[in-house]
Image (cartoon, rainbow, N blue to C red; front, side):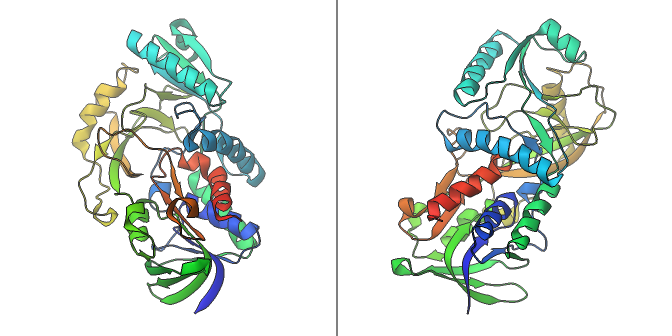
Length: 374
Protein backbone atom coordinates (compact mmCIF):
# COMPACT_ATOMS: atom_id res chain seq x y z
CA UNK A 1 0.00 0.00 0.00
CA UNK A 2 1.35 3.38 -1.02
CA UNK A 3 0.76 6.26 1.37
CA UNK A 4 0.22 9.81 0.16
CA UNK A 5 -1.15 12.95 1.74
CA UNK A 6 -3.97 13.64 -0.71
CA UNK A 7 -5.85 12.03 -3.58
CA UNK A 8 -8.07 13.86 -6.04
CA UNK A 9 -10.51 11.79 -8.09
CA UNK A 10 -11.04 13.29 -11.53
CA UNK A 11 -8.67 15.28 -13.76
CA UNK A 12 -10.99 17.82 -15.28
CA UNK A 13 -10.38 21.52 -14.75
CA UNK A 14 -11.73 21.35 -11.18
CA UNK A 15 -9.73 18.26 -10.20
CA UNK A 16 -6.55 19.72 -11.65
CA UNK A 17 -7.11 23.05 -9.88
CA UNK A 18 -7.71 21.25 -6.57
CA UNK A 19 -4.69 18.98 -7.07
CA UNK A 20 -2.53 22.00 -7.88
CA UNK A 21 -3.66 23.77 -4.70
CA UNK A 22 -3.05 20.70 -2.52
CA UNK A 23 0.41 20.12 -3.96
CA UNK A 24 1.29 23.81 -3.64
CA UNK A 25 0.43 23.61 0.07
CA UNK A 26 3.13 20.98 0.53
CA UNK A 27 0.99 17.83 0.38
CA UNK A 28 2.08 14.79 -1.62
CA UNK A 29 -0.82 14.60 -4.10
CA UNK A 30 -2.05 12.13 -6.71
CA UNK A 31 -4.84 12.98 -9.18
CA UNK A 32 -6.66 9.86 -10.42
CA UNK A 33 -8.31 9.90 -13.86
CA UNK A 34 -10.36 7.07 -15.36
CA UNK A 35 -9.71 8.15 -18.98
CA UNK A 36 -6.44 8.03 -20.89
CA UNK A 37 -6.07 11.83 -20.88
CA UNK A 38 -7.05 14.72 -18.64
CA UNK A 39 -10.05 16.97 -19.20
CA UNK A 40 -11.80 14.98 -21.93
CA UNK A 41 -15.41 15.26 -20.72
CA UNK A 42 -17.21 18.32 -19.32
CA UNK A 43 -14.05 20.43 -19.26
CA UNK A 44 -13.59 19.90 -23.01
CA UNK A 45 -17.26 20.20 -23.98
CA UNK A 46 -18.47 23.67 -23.03
CA UNK A 47 -18.52 27.27 -24.26
CA UNK A 48 -15.09 28.16 -22.77
CA UNK A 49 -16.58 31.37 -21.39
CA UNK A 50 -15.15 33.30 -18.45
CA UNK A 51 -18.35 34.45 -16.74
CA UNK A 52 -18.68 37.77 -14.94
CA UNK A 53 -21.06 36.52 -12.20
CA UNK A 54 -24.39 38.14 -13.10
CA UNK A 55 -27.04 35.53 -12.58
CA UNK A 56 -26.40 33.71 -9.34
CA UNK A 57 -28.28 34.25 -6.06
CA UNK A 58 -26.70 36.68 -3.62
CA UNK A 59 -24.41 34.98 -1.14
CA UNK A 60 -24.40 31.69 -3.05
CA UNK A 61 -21.19 29.81 -3.69
CA UNK A 62 -21.78 30.26 -7.41
CA UNK A 63 -21.89 34.05 -7.01
CA UNK A 64 -18.95 34.30 -4.62
CA UNK A 65 -16.65 31.85 -6.40
CA UNK A 66 -17.50 33.10 -9.88
CA UNK A 67 -16.65 36.74 -9.11
CA UNK A 68 -13.50 35.84 -7.18
CA UNK A 69 -12.55 33.13 -9.66
CA UNK A 70 -13.04 35.39 -12.68
CA UNK A 71 -10.46 37.91 -11.47
CA UNK A 72 -8.02 35.19 -10.46
CA UNK A 73 -8.47 33.37 -13.76
CA UNK A 74 -7.71 36.47 -15.83
CA UNK A 75 -4.59 37.07 -13.73
CA UNK A 76 -3.53 33.42 -14.01
CA UNK A 77 -4.01 33.42 -17.79
CA UNK A 78 -1.85 36.55 -18.08
CA UNK A 79 0.82 35.07 -15.81
CA UNK A 80 0.96 31.74 -17.64
CA UNK A 81 0.42 33.12 -21.18
CA UNK A 82 -2.78 31.08 -21.57
CA UNK A 83 -4.73 32.15 -24.64
CA UNK A 84 -7.78 34.18 -23.63
CA UNK A 85 -9.68 37.31 -24.64
CA UNK A 86 -11.79 39.71 -22.60
CA UNK A 87 -14.24 40.21 -25.47
CA UNK A 88 -17.31 41.14 -23.41
CA UNK A 89 -20.88 40.00 -23.93
CA UNK A 90 -24.28 41.51 -24.67
CA UNK A 91 -27.24 40.09 -22.77
CA UNK A 92 -30.14 41.07 -25.02
CA UNK A 93 -33.86 41.72 -24.47
CA UNK A 94 -36.35 41.26 -27.27
CA UNK A 95 -39.44 42.71 -25.61
CA UNK A 96 -40.82 44.50 -22.57
CA UNK A 97 -41.01 41.38 -20.42
CA UNK A 98 -37.39 40.57 -21.19
CA UNK A 99 -36.40 44.16 -20.48
CA UNK A 100 -37.84 43.71 -16.99
CA UNK A 101 -35.87 40.49 -16.64
CA UNK A 102 -32.71 42.33 -17.69
CA UNK A 103 -33.34 44.90 -14.97
CA UNK A 104 -33.55 42.09 -12.43
CA UNK A 105 -30.31 40.55 -13.71
CA UNK A 106 -28.63 43.97 -13.60
CA UNK A 107 -29.64 44.39 -9.97
CA UNK A 108 -28.50 40.86 -9.16
CA UNK A 109 -25.15 41.48 -10.81
CA UNK A 110 -24.62 44.61 -8.75
CA UNK A 111 -25.44 42.69 -5.57
CA UNK A 112 -22.88 40.07 -6.60
CA UNK A 113 -20.16 42.67 -7.01
CA UNK A 114 -20.26 42.97 -10.81
CA UNK A 115 -19.97 46.74 -10.95
CA UNK A 116 -19.07 47.33 -14.59
CA UNK A 117 -22.42 46.45 -16.24
CA UNK A 118 -23.82 49.00 -18.68
CA UNK A 119 -27.28 49.47 -20.20
CA UNK A 120 -27.49 49.86 -23.97
CA UNK A 121 -30.52 50.94 -25.98
CA UNK A 122 -31.36 49.91 -29.53
CA UNK A 123 -29.37 52.72 -31.28
CA UNK A 124 -26.26 51.94 -29.22
CA UNK A 125 -26.60 48.24 -30.05
CA UNK A 126 -27.05 49.03 -33.72
CA UNK A 127 -23.82 51.02 -33.67
CA UNK A 128 -21.91 48.29 -31.82
CA UNK A 129 -23.32 45.23 -33.60
CA UNK A 130 -25.24 46.23 -36.77
CA UNK A 131 -26.64 42.71 -37.39
CA UNK A 132 -28.08 42.39 -33.88
CA UNK A 133 -31.79 43.01 -33.27
CA UNK A 134 -32.77 43.83 -29.67
CA UNK A 135 -34.60 46.57 -27.82
CA UNK A 136 -32.03 46.78 -25.05
CA UNK A 137 -29.07 44.92 -23.64
CA UNK A 138 -26.74 44.66 -20.69
CA UNK A 139 -23.10 45.04 -21.67
CA UNK A 140 -20.74 42.93 -19.55
CA UNK A 141 -17.14 43.92 -20.34
CA UNK A 142 -15.72 41.42 -17.81
CA UNK A 143 -16.98 38.40 -19.75
CA UNK A 144 -14.40 36.63 -21.88
CA UNK A 145 -13.23 33.39 -23.45
CA UNK A 146 -10.34 31.08 -22.62
CA UNK A 147 -8.50 28.13 -24.12
CA UNK A 148 -9.69 25.51 -21.65
CA UNK A 149 -7.10 22.93 -22.77
CA UNK A 150 -4.31 25.47 -22.34
CA UNK A 151 -5.68 26.29 -18.89
CA UNK A 152 -5.64 22.63 -17.87
CA UNK A 153 -2.12 22.19 -19.23
CA UNK A 154 -0.96 25.07 -17.02
CA UNK A 155 -2.72 23.64 -13.96
CA UNK A 156 -1.15 20.24 -14.61
CA UNK A 157 2.26 21.85 -15.02
CA UNK A 158 1.90 23.59 -11.66
CA UNK A 159 0.72 20.36 -10.03
CA UNK A 160 3.76 18.46 -11.29
CA UNK A 161 6.18 21.30 -10.49
CA UNK A 162 4.97 21.11 -6.89
CA UNK A 163 5.63 17.35 -6.75
CA UNK A 164 2.13 16.12 -7.57
CA UNK A 165 1.40 13.41 -10.14
CA UNK A 166 -1.50 12.41 -12.36
CA UNK A 167 -2.42 8.73 -12.81
CA UNK A 168 -4.35 8.10 -16.04
CA UNK A 169 -6.49 5.01 -16.73
CA UNK A 170 -6.90 4.74 -12.95
CA UNK A 171 -10.58 4.54 -11.97
CA UNK A 172 -11.58 4.35 -8.32
CA UNK A 173 -13.14 0.96 -7.64
CA UNK A 174 -13.81 1.31 -3.92
CA UNK A 175 -12.85 3.40 -0.92
CA UNK A 176 -13.10 2.94 2.82
CA UNK A 177 -13.40 6.05 4.94
CA UNK A 178 -11.52 5.01 8.05
CA UNK A 179 -13.13 5.95 11.36
CA UNK A 180 -11.61 8.50 13.68
CA UNK A 181 -10.13 10.58 10.89
CA UNK A 182 -7.25 8.13 10.43
CA UNK A 183 -7.06 8.51 6.68
CA UNK A 184 -8.78 6.56 3.90
CA UNK A 185 -8.02 3.46 1.83
CA UNK A 186 -8.60 3.61 -1.91
CA UNK A 187 -8.64 0.66 -4.30
CA UNK A 188 -7.75 1.78 -7.79
CA UNK A 189 -8.30 -0.30 -10.91
CA UNK A 190 -7.13 0.04 -14.48
CA UNK A 191 -3.98 -1.15 -16.19
CA UNK A 192 -1.90 -0.92 -12.99
CA UNK A 193 -4.18 -1.62 -9.98
CA UNK A 194 -3.01 -0.17 -6.70
CA UNK A 195 -4.11 0.49 -3.16
CA UNK A 196 -3.56 3.93 -1.71
CA UNK A 197 -3.79 5.29 1.81
CA UNK A 198 -4.50 9.01 1.97
CA UNK A 199 -5.31 11.52 4.69
CA UNK A 200 -7.34 13.73 2.34
CA UNK A 201 -9.61 12.71 -0.56
CA UNK A 202 -11.45 15.06 -2.92
CA UNK A 203 -14.13 13.65 -5.19
CA UNK A 204 -14.02 15.89 -8.29
CA UNK A 205 -15.33 13.25 -10.68
CA UNK A 206 -17.86 15.52 -12.41
CA UNK A 207 -20.50 13.42 -14.18
CA UNK A 208 -19.37 10.41 -12.12
CA UNK A 209 -19.16 12.20 -8.74
CA UNK A 210 -22.34 10.63 -7.36
CA UNK A 211 -21.24 7.18 -8.55
CA UNK A 212 -17.84 7.64 -6.89
CA UNK A 213 -19.47 8.74 -3.63
CA UNK A 214 -21.62 5.61 -3.58
CA UNK A 215 -18.41 3.57 -3.63
CA UNK A 216 -17.19 5.11 -0.36
CA UNK A 217 -17.78 2.77 2.57
CA UNK A 218 -18.44 4.89 5.64
CA UNK A 219 -20.28 7.68 3.82
CA UNK A 220 -23.99 7.58 4.65
CA UNK A 221 -26.18 7.10 1.54
CA UNK A 222 -28.36 10.11 2.39
CA UNK A 223 -25.40 12.37 1.62
CA UNK A 224 -25.22 11.24 -2.00
CA UNK A 225 -27.65 13.07 -4.32
CA UNK A 226 -29.14 11.59 -7.44
CA UNK A 227 -27.18 12.42 -10.57
CA UNK A 228 -29.10 14.02 -13.44
CA UNK A 229 -27.80 14.88 -16.87
CA UNK A 230 -28.72 17.79 -19.15
CA UNK A 231 -27.14 17.64 -22.58
CA UNK A 232 -26.23 20.82 -24.37
CA UNK A 233 -25.85 20.66 -28.16
CA UNK A 234 -23.77 23.13 -30.17
CA UNK A 235 -23.95 24.13 -33.82
CA UNK A 236 -21.17 25.96 -35.64
CA UNK A 237 -21.61 28.72 -38.19
CA UNK A 238 -20.31 27.78 -41.62
CA UNK A 239 -19.62 31.40 -42.61
CA UNK A 240 -17.80 34.20 -40.82
CA UNK A 241 -19.88 35.68 -38.00
CA UNK A 242 -20.79 39.37 -38.24
CA UNK A 243 -20.32 39.78 -34.47
CA UNK A 244 -17.32 40.81 -32.38
CA UNK A 245 -18.83 40.07 -28.95
CA UNK A 246 -20.65 37.22 -27.24
CA UNK A 247 -24.45 37.45 -27.60
CA UNK A 248 -26.68 35.94 -24.92
CA UNK A 249 -30.48 35.85 -24.71
CA UNK A 250 -32.30 36.08 -21.40
CA UNK A 251 -31.55 32.87 -19.43
CA UNK A 252 -33.74 29.75 -19.59
CA UNK A 253 -34.72 27.37 -16.81
CA UNK A 254 -32.01 24.74 -17.48
CA UNK A 255 -29.25 27.00 -18.76
CA UNK A 256 -28.31 30.35 -20.26
CA UNK A 257 -30.15 29.87 -23.53
CA UNK A 258 -28.87 29.36 -27.08
CA UNK A 259 -26.16 31.99 -27.19
CA UNK A 260 -23.50 32.96 -29.67
CA UNK A 261 -19.93 32.49 -28.53
CA UNK A 262 -16.68 32.96 -30.39
CA UNK A 263 -13.57 30.87 -30.13
CA UNK A 264 -10.13 32.45 -30.03
CA UNK A 265 -9.88 32.19 -33.82
CA UNK A 266 -13.14 34.12 -34.24
CA UNK A 267 -15.25 31.13 -35.30
CA UNK A 268 -18.85 31.40 -34.10
CA UNK A 269 -20.86 28.63 -32.48
CA UNK A 270 -24.36 28.56 -31.07
CA UNK A 271 -25.55 26.70 -28.01
CA UNK A 272 -26.03 25.01 -25.77
CA UNK A 273 -29.66 24.04 -25.78
CA UNK A 274 -31.08 21.96 -22.90
CA UNK A 275 -31.89 18.30 -23.53
CA UNK A 276 -32.59 16.25 -20.41
CA UNK A 277 -31.27 12.71 -20.74
CA UNK A 278 -32.94 9.58 -19.41
CA UNK A 279 -29.85 7.46 -18.73
CA UNK A 280 -28.87 5.43 -15.70
CA UNK A 281 -25.25 6.56 -15.65
CA UNK A 282 -22.81 8.88 -17.41
CA UNK A 283 -21.35 5.85 -19.19
CA UNK A 284 -24.52 5.65 -21.30
CA UNK A 285 -24.34 9.21 -22.66
CA UNK A 286 -24.40 9.62 -26.44
CA UNK A 287 -22.56 12.83 -27.34
CA UNK A 288 -23.73 12.85 -30.96
CA UNK A 289 -25.55 15.98 -32.16
CA UNK A 290 -28.85 15.32 -33.93
CA UNK A 291 -28.91 17.52 -37.08
CA UNK A 292 -32.70 17.82 -36.75
CA UNK A 293 -32.23 19.96 -33.64
CA UNK A 294 -31.01 22.73 -35.95
CA UNK A 295 -34.60 23.84 -36.56
CA UNK A 296 -34.92 24.95 -32.93
CA UNK A 297 -31.56 26.71 -33.14
CA UNK A 298 -32.60 28.71 -36.20
CA UNK A 299 -35.77 29.85 -34.40
CA UNK A 300 -33.91 30.83 -31.22
CA UNK A 301 -31.01 32.59 -32.92
CA UNK A 302 -33.21 34.56 -35.32
CA UNK A 303 -34.85 36.26 -32.36
CA UNK A 304 -31.67 38.31 -32.04
CA UNK A 305 -30.04 37.72 -35.44
CA UNK A 306 -32.80 37.66 -38.06
CA UNK A 307 -30.19 37.64 -40.82
CA UNK A 308 -28.95 34.12 -40.03
CA UNK A 309 -28.87 32.44 -43.48
CA UNK A 310 -30.64 29.16 -44.16
CA UNK A 311 -28.24 26.21 -44.14
CA UNK A 312 -25.56 28.10 -42.19
CA UNK A 313 -25.62 25.91 -39.06
CA UNK A 314 -23.65 22.67 -38.87
CA UNK A 315 -23.67 20.14 -36.00
CA UNK A 316 -20.54 20.74 -33.90
CA UNK A 317 -20.34 18.97 -30.53
CA UNK A 318 -22.22 18.48 -27.29
CA UNK A 319 -21.53 18.54 -23.57
CA UNK A 320 -23.46 17.35 -20.54
CA UNK A 321 -24.08 19.36 -17.37
CA UNK A 322 -23.50 17.32 -14.17
CA UNK A 323 -26.74 18.27 -12.46
CA UNK A 324 -28.20 17.14 -9.14
CA UNK A 325 -31.73 18.36 -9.88
CA UNK A 326 -34.31 17.47 -12.49
CA UNK A 327 -36.51 19.29 -15.00
CA UNK A 328 -38.74 21.92 -13.46
CA UNK A 329 -36.84 21.96 -10.16
CA UNK A 330 -34.96 25.06 -8.98
CA UNK A 331 -31.23 24.92 -9.70
CA UNK A 332 -29.25 24.31 -6.50
CA UNK A 333 -25.99 25.95 -5.55
CA UNK A 334 -22.63 24.27 -5.99
CA UNK A 335 -22.58 21.36 -3.53
CA UNK A 336 -19.20 21.36 -1.77
CA UNK A 337 -19.81 18.69 0.81
CA UNK A 338 -17.16 18.42 3.48
CA UNK A 339 -16.75 16.89 6.95
CA UNK A 340 -19.15 19.43 8.49
CA UNK A 341 -21.93 18.13 6.24
CA UNK A 342 -21.30 14.37 6.11
CA UNK A 343 -19.14 13.76 9.21
CA UNK A 344 -16.26 12.02 7.44
CA UNK A 345 -12.92 13.66 8.24
CA UNK A 346 -10.64 14.50 5.35
CA UNK A 347 -13.24 14.00 2.59
CA UNK A 348 -14.82 16.55 0.24
CA UNK A 349 -17.37 15.60 -2.40
CA UNK A 350 -18.08 18.03 -5.24
CA UNK A 351 -21.57 17.55 -6.66
CA UNK A 352 -23.37 19.56 -9.34
CA UNK A 353 -20.32 21.59 -10.37
CA UNK A 354 -21.64 22.92 -13.66
CA UNK A 355 -21.37 26.49 -14.97
CA UNK A 356 -19.67 28.66 -13.72
CA UNK A 357 -17.30 25.89 -12.63
CA UNK A 358 -14.65 26.67 -15.25
CA UNK A 359 -14.58 30.35 -14.27
CA UNK A 360 -14.56 29.45 -10.57
CA UNK A 361 -11.90 26.73 -10.66
CA UNK A 362 -9.10 28.52 -8.80
CA UNK A 363 -11.38 30.02 -6.14
CA UNK A 364 -13.25 26.72 -5.80
CA UNK A 365 -9.96 24.91 -5.16
CA UNK A 366 -9.19 27.25 -2.28
CA UNK A 367 -12.67 26.66 -0.88
CA UNK A 368 -12.05 22.90 -0.94
CA UNK A 369 -8.79 23.29 0.96
CA UNK A 370 -10.57 25.42 3.54
CA UNK A 371 -13.21 22.71 4.01
CA UNK A 372 -10.41 20.20 4.57
CA UNK A 373 -8.66 22.48 7.05
CA UNK A 374 -5.51 22.65 4.90
